[in-house]
Image 1 (spheres, rainbow, N blue to C red):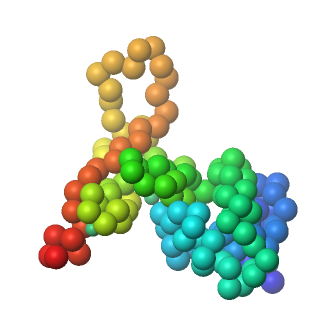
Image 2 (image 1 turned 90 degrees about the vertical axis):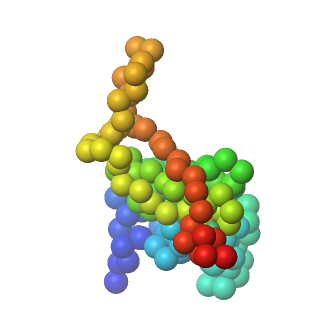
Length: 138
Ligand SMILES: [Zn+2]
Ligand SMILES: [Zn+2]
């Protein structure tokens, strides 16, 4: 049986290595996870893996467009499988938890800058900052 992750890799022209499949599967349940979290999550199923190979896998998957990399200020790079829809993020300034925010208005880039300096704008990456529900009630 071919899993969703294997299909994604094949369609992107990547070999479905155990590490790539495991990373994609882990990101299904751990959106906005960093390399260290993903490494700890796949280590039980792939004991021979290393943090360096997880970084390599995440680089390959990002380059192929299968995952998106975001880097909120003060946070390590985070990865997610939701790609191509120009969604934004809200980040908790206390605990660092991250949630998705759909486009601010309509289609990407969903924001009209007052001056684009002649650039053809394709995406807008917005990070909203605040306190998550858990930190608000703490
Ligand atoms: Zn929080
Ligand atoms: Zn997201």
